[in-house]
Length: 450
Image (tube, rainbow, N blue to C red):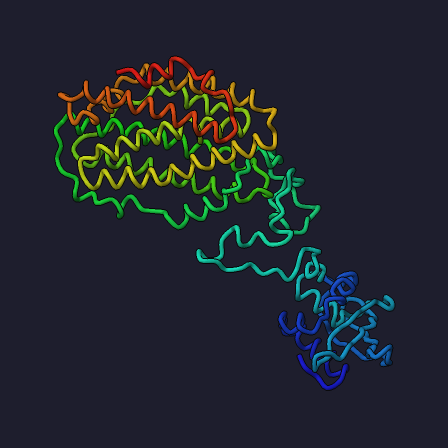
């Protein structure tokens, strides 16, 4: 919108408002004019009928035009125009007086066309930020620039307000109840989200199902039982985080986005392992006892749920996947178990990094976390004692058939010892000291029994 005089610029501004040319209107406004124009409350007065120029004078190098706007009422405005950058721009505006019914003016029409008033153009948030592109593109970590990357220790809003956005006092709350950063935060949540997006896979097309070959009935039954257990476990891993997502403050959106990928990962696993159980003449096996699942569903705080699901149970599921990949009878099974391991490693990494962050911020909660594991380990021990179907299936797979099942049990016991060592080491890394002395004796016995 270029013009030789302020009067010509005014006419061009009115014409742009009439045709609802928003870019041209915005280009004609200097930043300092935005709050002034918004304060005029010109929106909703009606359709501009005509306008007239009342006066013109100079003020400190600016040109001030008095203009009368005719619509449902007559409004007199003083509009300050400034010549800058080779054109005329609005540097300020104020209402002179209210007049009798009759019309809406240019500024009102412009404000109405732009969206009631122009205060949204100056929300008070940080302006001029630019996120750097990296080797992996524009990542979540890359856009944590300036104030937008400042994660509060305590969220202050129960709405869906994006972190860093201006607050709208009229927006209703959304049932958010988790406001403490320490309760959910992981320093690597954003990176885990990016990895999950970049490494997603499709069970329908990326598992070479056509290469599955017929197996001895015992081996097929063992594979199907393991796939049944994993599919059931991953339904839990999808359902539970979904029940917590809406409670978490949007100030911690990195965690919310990561949990969304976990839900999808787990759903994909439930799908993929169900498909394998039904793809080769076998079928689904027996349901698990479900004691530890019930405990996780009943968790009262997020950190309890995360410790049990992401650390304790994910570590157990990872052991099942490791056995499945090591004993895979063909490429299809190997690829299925290997891809699922890749996904589950992210869930375990989130759980451990969250646990470490929590203990760094709130070390006094260690006793509480130990009590959660006391219950969780007891429930897993109970499940293992009652789940003969899964125990037999793992022994058959490790023994390469029913005849080698006893040797398979010895291998399973050795893997159980290794699992305990890795489990305790992870907790030590996360800062939860003293777990070895509290490890449930029934869990150790169930894992290492040959």
